[in-house]
Image (tube, rainbow, N blue to C red):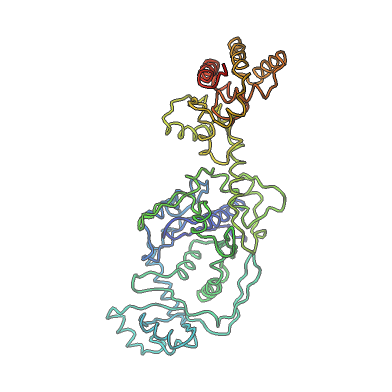
Length: 508
């Protein structure tokens, strides 16, 4: 019988969620939804020294903003909880003991100083089958002494007992079969008495098994851990329920080589976190995609195509389309360059296809911040004319503030180029015919009306439109001229013309 698809996203609450982590979560979500499966949200907080207050809440808010929905887990409930690893201590103890009883693990009392001494004495020291009998552990100490040390409260760790020269095969959906010799794997720490918590390796195996996870989709950086995880499934006798692995290629720097880092974003001016992050330890503030003006749908679409290809030329895809098309087998084995300029392009595309009312609601926050009181209808009208010119909503205000703030000065270069001796007379005549026109709401009919007047007067269109724009805007920018007049309306258009005619040279 085919197992139900159950995948998990299991971040550590150690800081802001990196955009690479967002992509991992997205791929898990797409895979789960395509297969009518479940996405579980689990928190890996076994490393208590790295815990950062607020990180868990930040991760949840980020994924909610992006539209990634969980079926169960921390803050969502479910039948496999608790979903926070720090709340599962008693569960792990049982499985630690099982490994000790089956001789697949042992207790080690080596102090940090003793381990450092070995590293200095033995080049490339590795705690494994070749060195463990030289160390202080339950393999070398009498049983009575081990029990005595534990009773005295001596700190210890439990290490996996890896036998050398065994072939381990990791079946990976993306990379195919990966063959590893067990001799290169050290006896990893699985449990620490200092905080009564397991390490990542044991906690994940136990949780994935008990939560019936069918597929583990995670970053390439975890591939070296996979052989140990395969062994642990074997040690527990869980081979039949071992999840299928898929290790995603890294997100790479936009320039040069190596993994994408926050420093790359700081250096090149783009976010690497979904939301703005305020580091409670350092006080540093890092930019986020949301606060930088990105639409969540654009971020999702952009990320989906970093390391996966649908097999066609389609680039703009909704979440539903991504779910329909996504295949783990089509994920790349090699890293994907983080083309942040392409991210801007995606945002531009999504701004164009987003309803003007939604864009206007966001843009209105900038308008209010600049002390302007306006109507929703006017904001929406401006958006309809201007959104094709921007990559981000927060670029709108500098481009079109003139719709609300009349010019008090006029661009000197534009005046020199476009305001000629004959211009004042032409603009006065234009004002007179506009006073007779009452259909300002319709840019097309106003344009035709003015064009007919220009032809009748034998005025070149450029000789009229450029100075007309200068009078209303203050410089030679903005959308189609009669879209400007449609927004301003008749009264404001005439008022601005009067002011300009007073301020600009008369050549009298």
